Length: 256
Image (cartoon, rainbow, N blue to C red; front, side, top):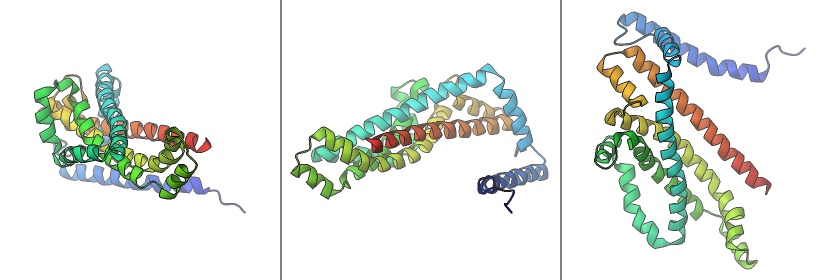
């Protein structure tokens, strides 16, 4: 006799129940406090989000922030890999970049944002801040991946005189991709936090950050929670799509 609940369905149920439990706790706390300005209920947030989704301004703001933050992340990923490759090849470049990487890692997002407003317009602020937050992570991880390449494989490549292009494709890429993947997982979350924080400070017109700021000014707590939920959903979708592309790249390289 077979069970009516398959392992896949059981796993989905086990993943859903904590979400339902926390929503009920949230609803209970909101009802206990009794002031939605202090803590809005999830029902009110869902209702407000449904209203926002039907407005053209909502999608315009989402795409405004998405384009800039995604561009900042992709630029950081590309240049981080490039700088790491140069640093692994030339020791002086690694030494030259070391203070900059430490500076980027240590400086708070707010400080970067305020300084960046001197040089760039508020509309492109999230591009620069996202880039500055993610690039050091990609650079450090990829550089460590290159340095940890199997020395026996490199020695074998020297013995058989394998050209540099094939070494990169068959040795370095396979060794470095897990490090790059790990850097992207960390950087994807960070770029959205940093990018939206930059928009809240710079308040560029038509951005998600502007909507969050205005919700705070007018004590529109349902809007604040609805836009926060929007940021979470958009960042998760972007992360899943990008990591899917990375996994497809890894699969394609493994078949070569």
